[in-house]
Length: 127
Image (cartoon, rainbow, N blue to C red; front, top):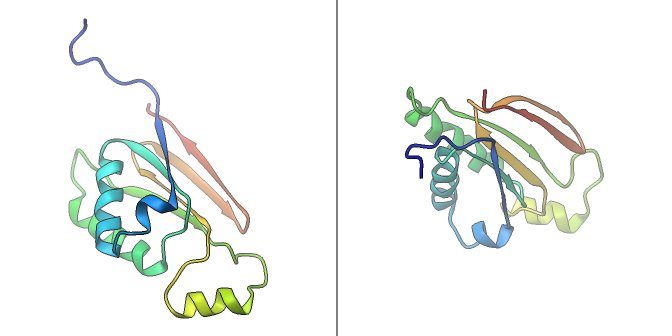
């Protein structure tokens, strides 16, 4: 068996909202950064809040080094490009989330992210 065999390809990990829902913002950020440092591109079922996104970027910048160049992130929120209901507005006002999707990956793999109101396109390469 060959030792130090380099992993080929890029691993995508789909994370159910039930994994992150019981965690506080700090725990979510730690969980996400741990997975990203394992060279995974994450697709999170529910969008992070703008506060959580900014904290994730802040924590990432503190940890950038030669081995960890940072992250790329893009979020689709459920209300982008559409009208929100009173219920959705109330949930957001109280700091909650009503759905969406967040894609986060190591910047060494994510070459390009394109986003429009209803889709995210990601180009990744391990070369």
